[in-house]
Image (cartoon, rainbow, N blue to C red; front, side):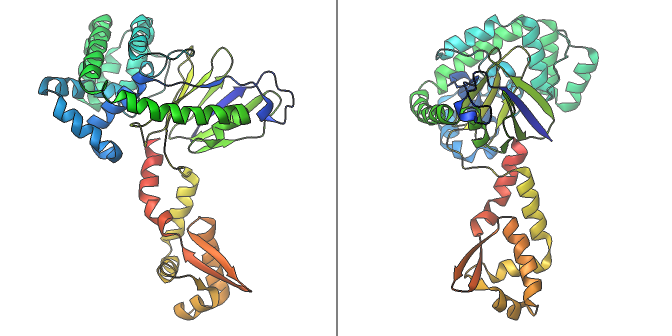
Length: 365
């Protein structure tokens, strides 16, 4: 399963060279997106260990009432974020008040549909402006908190939006405003690096994001595929640009939002190490399922060992050992180096250790 972005690249001087292309992609810092990443970390601290310091400070600053309200709104800024909690338009740098103002001006039908998307956790865009009984029943099956938000949304969507915006502003004053200057510096640094890459590589800069694979540019279009746990296709054009939104507290999530009529938004971790693809994780898990390969991993964990010596240790032939080592090497689980005619193998202990967190990061995407 995957999300495919089809990027229009007008102005290409050489259709085979995306680096010469003027592309509808921009880096956009978003205090609202970072505020909601903080709120999600507060709600699910176990998923965001690197945000533990901020979560502890927030608990020390906030009263019980504000913490309870944050928990009540949590379905909107969970891993499946409401679209309006990310930038709704491209352009100049915005303050938090600017972004909250854009949400306040959002057509109420779009606000309702984007909210229902987040509550149910789907990318369907043909959602009725008013919630049906069937939709409320689906929400009840997910959780009572989502059903409660859905019921209030059907009764008075304007009041729900007003209360949500009031809460976000109050929470920002209490537990985010003091953090924002330091966060902004980190995001500015990452944004500058990403903008430099955009100038150098054009649309191919998207291929440097987690789990991304870019095809060969065809004419004035480039297809970029991201491993996700659902299928979707979105078009990126001058009228509908792609906004790259770095985050500190959003890690390990990698968010792609593509609601019709609004920019495509990609929120990515500003300082995250490269996350392997889902296919890479599958290959590594499959390679480690074999008992013989597990014995090989044990043998080459601490010291590099040659194939012939491994054959002696395991009571196998050298060709048998070579076949198993090839599977481990193809999965990216071993290092090799040569001394003269002899090739030595050693387990990549970091790759094995990361397999659990890497797999979890892939699932969070």
